[in-house]
Length: 203
Ligand code: MG
Image (tube, rainbow, N blue to C red; front, side):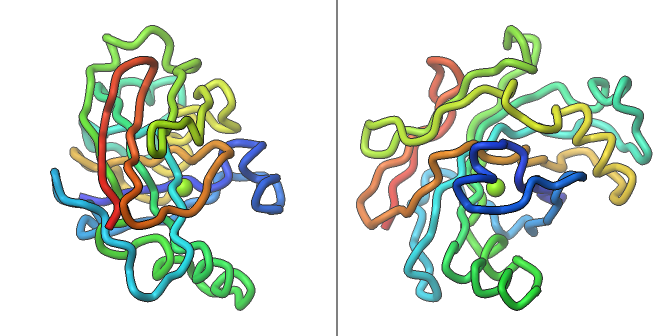
């Protein structure tokens, strides 16, 4: 399985990193080895002094598809989750300045937190889903999917032009503003509405 990640999908996050607003979604991949094993702490890697949390709504693909039309995209997922796209921001900045791919900064072991899954039928409105990240019990990121530049269905249509989607693939739909560094002993908890989807410790 693969993790397909969308960058720059929330306007306020684009401005906090002083990036340009894209005319098409920004896509990158993480390998399955990026997924942090359940109940494990996240260890800040040696090669970075500035690892940022990026909380993101996740979508799990449930059937094989290619060139999916946005109006049929809803048939390709039943479950919604929440996770973190950990990013070695200092390393990413260097790679960006040199025009190099981001993978070392984005796809390292443990960089993908995948929380629990719920059936989308249990959620009121996927196009206005409130979610948040609490660091040490304080809210640091809070948004709704209404703030996305590209909706879940539009993302599926777009990425499936390039990659065949397979059962179990996970899409990270982009992060809202409020990203910031994590330190050893931080606790990170993710919520959709009032419901907790993950809780991890940083080491
Ligand atoms: Mg991200």
